[in-house]
Image (tube, rainbow, N blue to C red; front, side, top):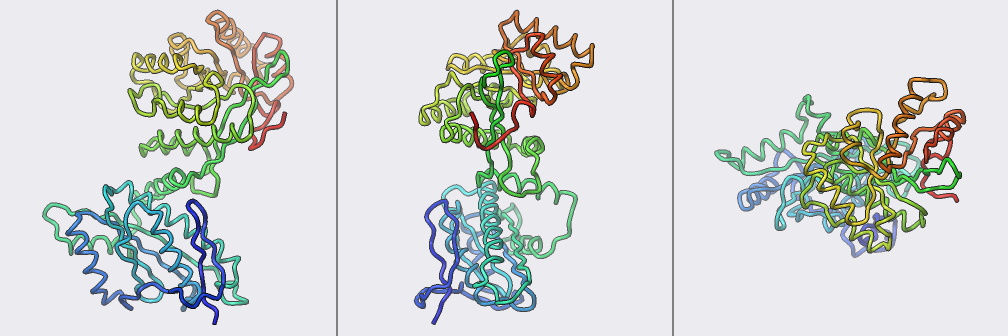
Length: 432
């Protein structure tokens, strides 16, 4: 007798499914109700939990493989859901199978459990089932031999709280009405975007890449800028769009911190030489206590000297409080870090920021560098900025160099450093 068995993975690993002789292991979830039309036990359990804790999460998982689902597929999903229960913030208060194609998970508080934690749990469940689905298409032990049909897995979730004046029955009715085909509304795109961003942050789906900063006078690598790429397909794939949208959902700081940690770990692993340019938003310098010390602690653990780190100020948010901002900059300088202004010449990273900040580095935007060898206006602007930066002791980095003519002109007027596809593209590895 052959039974489906899923090896229980170690923490942070991905479950694998295989056919092994293991008749003692349970292969299905409790089938408490066979029809959604008569889910007395399921509804009663959800209702009692909501009345007791005041909050709960309901996750619905719908499997579609034609008229009937293979028992092996149902069993594999059942075991995967059990394993996932150990990784969630909420406690699984019940896992139920309804009909032939639907699972329900009841997530109840284990200590503090708010909607943000529920959304993280939902993102984890969605991501793991997505991985499992990709695996199941390759593993023909799970699906019938000779089948070319695709498995569809749909995951949705609703967070419930007791509202004043609302009964638990009505709250559950709202939840299941939303789970079962609520009409699409204008906010659905925002919900999809939020789920995608939360999935990227919660599962660490960021890959750092490094682009060299070259000394234009000597041709030697001065350092590398750490950039971030989304690790797997998502509805938000472009990095700039990801940061812009994360800010609108209040998740920019969490995303930025994730990118910084990933980049520094890779710097250690690859032994990246020279200065390390890390993109940060003005919010980091305007925070009073939040996140201060996190980078220093990580650098100490990784044995990376603070003097190698250059915080590159991006234009993702406006500087609202200059006094607070400058005090924050002074704090980081006292810790041994350097400061760079990114993309000077576009947006609101202008002369006010340059004159008040007096950074160690100034990065000129691609707008100023593009075809500068053929534009007398751009030449006058860049030459003036180079003279000014020399007077305040700031080193100039020209971004977006793509043509030899651009590099030759920048070299001739004494621009210190260059960056761009002509000098080196962003890559996951370092070549020296």
